Length: 234
Image (cartoon, one colour):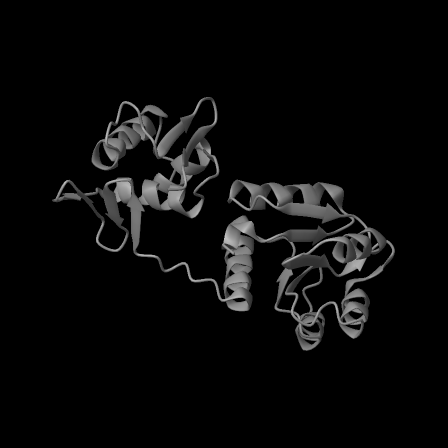
């Protein structure tokens, strides 16, 4: 199982916030995200299908997230299912209580999207022993070295620029899924200095020239018109 294939369940009765969190996860490439707006609904979803990670609000309209977590642990549902508590509380006692129950992490609202993603990624890697330290990718007749920043093609080593390597790395982390133009631009130019989408188009063209057998008819680095790009699985 790959990290982005994990099913994540958001349990929060604030529908707007749950929607924002779901969008953050989906934009990062997590394709299997569901929400439950009550503990009753969450209980049904957990027992109905496999869930790999739960983002659990502490205070909900029909109960307490801590009590819900303890109850499911006693029923044998939570022994290996990681949970991250989400709470507007910032008291140390509340955080320590959640972690003391066996939770994998505790995040206080409001939180930065990047912080949420980093913590989710860390929990998934730790709990499911996922190794993302892949250094080489084979695409047809090309061998891309993520560590060396090179492409070996037709017996020749071709150097990738820093932008090209970043672009490829983002697409590789989300292989098989569409990565929007906005997300790619934010990754390549985090200070917002990219200006026009044309800059991304130029870097993609150069990347295709180095990787694809026929850059004008790409097999792996595909354009999804009106949305962005995606790296097809080899």
